[in-house]
Image 1 (spheres, rainbow, N blue to C red):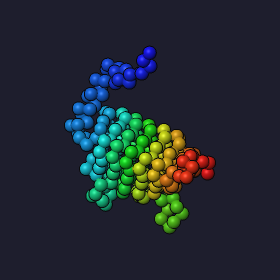
Image 2: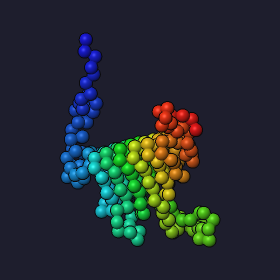
Image 3: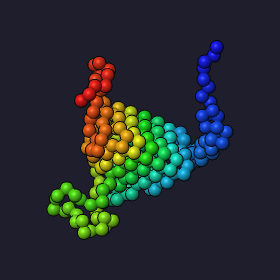
Image 4: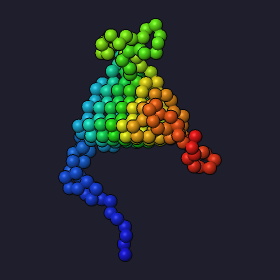
Length: 204
């Protein structure tokens, strides 16, 4: 008895779903030739300041925007074979770098920007100032290779997520996470670390 289950595109997506994928593929090769598959609609702002890498796959409704504030080079840089799912929002004015083979779930927000300064320095902003009138500040965001970011995660400015780390759903990443870590919560903190000797995830 043959227990092999077929995973054809028609079984997964259905007839109309396959046609829709085909239309996405054609549009991808016309407008994003180095990408694997871009699902439309997608909103791109400042395309000339974005390096899409090779083999990018997106879900629907993604928003990727770069605003060159005092900079004319690449602001958002994707590595190779990245997959981002539905309604991901990435916004940068200084530097956002996403490494190879990164998986990003739906409704994730990644930004190197903040309206205003709230550090307590001499230039901190007043609550009486309209948020949109406060000066933008930015610090680079780096997401290294093989990172997996779960649903509804927010990654804020100045953060590095190390190679192979996992960020659990609904987390807010306010500080850098080393490589080989599972982090969850608001703010995200390490709960497990991969042991290279035992080859197991262990509680921190």
